[in-house]
Length: 57
Image (tube, rainbow, N blue to C red):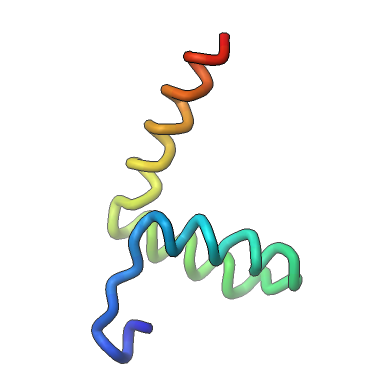
């Protein structure tokens, strides 16, 4: 993906990380986590999850 100048977004991360977990690709999952953290993608997802959690209370 990165070789072709494609920038993954939150939807890509949400799709790929569970696949990594399912297949036991821990190293790939850690790399994706590190990449998304450096791009600030996880902060956006976390804020949505926190908002959703607060709504459920």
